[in-house]
Length: 491
Ligand code: HEM
Image (cartoon, rainbow, N blue to C red):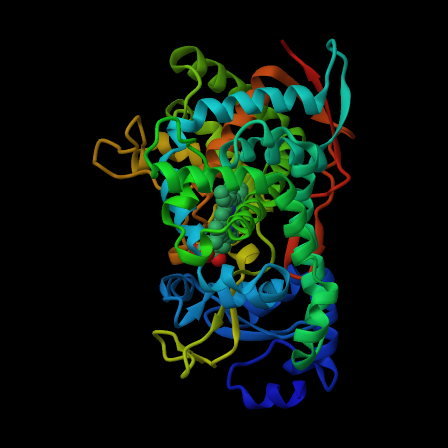
């Protein structure tokens, strides 16, 4: 079937030139070295669409920024983000079909959660201070080895849940572990379920899925809280005094009918955590590896953080004045946050998806962009292979895109390279219709955490000049889960 489908599609494949079993070899190579495989395709088809075989399916890859913009702008009923994710995660069996059919939590994150960031910032800041103290457990001023990803994960999970469910639950270790593990279960079990033939999935998939057990576990913590909140909303309406300003209220504001139940709401809290914790933790982990690898960035960012905090205090608005920190995180994302492929969509339009140059990708195909190649393209970035932490903040000061303080220069040009700005050249948060709605929270949280670290701690590499290697599996890439850095208290 595989070989036949190669012949049938008019879209070329990078494996074509290599003989009979070339697809299988390419698929295996893709597992360990997807970036190279995709880069080869980009080189071969610089302005085209090409296919490459992976273990489970053919991936269609659209090269060129114009094509990326067309994918990013396509509506869900033509190119489906949710169907793309549903295949990778086996959403129906691992999370539940409701999340795909009624993704109202996305509107909650894009709307209320983002709008309330400034108001909720003091809580977020408070949790950051406590979480760093508790998780790092540093006494005196001795250097201590810090296991970065797992510890950052704890700090991020706790801080994020201060905003999602508030105190005291955001400090409950079992609840935090449940949320951290939820994502891991979905990714790993999703891959197993993918191996089951479609017609057997309804029978066999539930045996492999942790959907019900995770929800039962979550209800142990969220059940009583959600019951109380639902009852209060029902009795007093949504405007009662002291109604908590958290994700539970924001979900309740737009949840309708069957979504207004305790299990349905608990599931949305799990899903928001899934979207938030690993993404933000891996981003901060990579940034810390970069900070210890390129320590010349430390002092300028520290001075910036200390000056801004002395002048403006801690607030969401003051974080906007931390241009170097913003730039450093964006640069770290440019080089580390994406895998070989991004913006994955499934073609759901019956007649396929046709680009403006007439190329058609067939119905049912999975279509992506070469994310790493875009971030490493010399047409998009000067010296793209160099980690230049202040490449974006420097632009603010130059005539073309000076941003100060309203982010417009004397000619009215708007600065467009903030950490949260997506563009065809920078897709760490995706781009277009489905660009990450949580990025404003993520940037606020991560900038506040990095500024807090710079002001309060010294960090250095565990082994000087060595950056722990990223883990790569197919199109996925994450920073080392076992990497360490050294840390000590400054003040
Ligand atoms: C640094 C941290 C983060 C990164 C790198 C990240 C990255 C992404 C990416 C790449 C996408 C897909 C975009 C596309 O394909 O066009 C996405 C979607 C999404 N993200 Fe994030 N994300 C982060 C943090 C968060 C946080 C904190 C939340 C929630 C509070 C969140 C909620 C979501 C949701 C709900 C979607 C689905 C959007 C949709 O269905 O249209 N993310 N994110």
